Amino acid sequence: RIRLIRGWDDLFTTLDDHMGGLILMKSSPYYRAVREFQEEGNLWEERLTKLRGAFDAWVDVQRRWVYLEGIFFGSADIKAQLP
Image 1 (cartoon, rainbow, N blue to C red):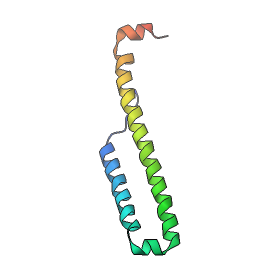
Image 2 (spheres, rainbow, N blue to C red; image 1 turned 120 degrees about the vertical axis):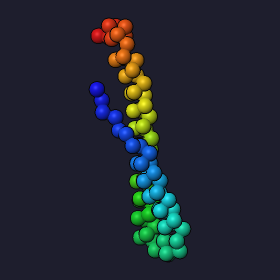
Image 3 (cartoon, rainbow, N blue to C red; image 1 turned 180 degrees about the vertical axis):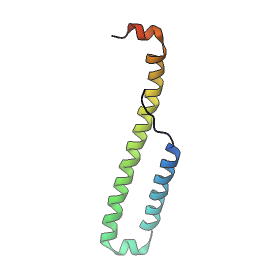
């Protein structure tokens, strides 16, 4: 039996909050005035965007696993046909 990750909503909410905070910082005149802030902000935006993509893929894989697990391990008929 595979352990599943629960509580995705909290994870996505936190990630969205951080993305929102980053967007607010990028709208600041101080952000635009300092090149180092822009570089750091772009780096974090890229990281958070990649993390969001990874979480989306993970949720999709987990959803598919739950679906297939029910088919392959829940059915005695299919179990008998597997090597």
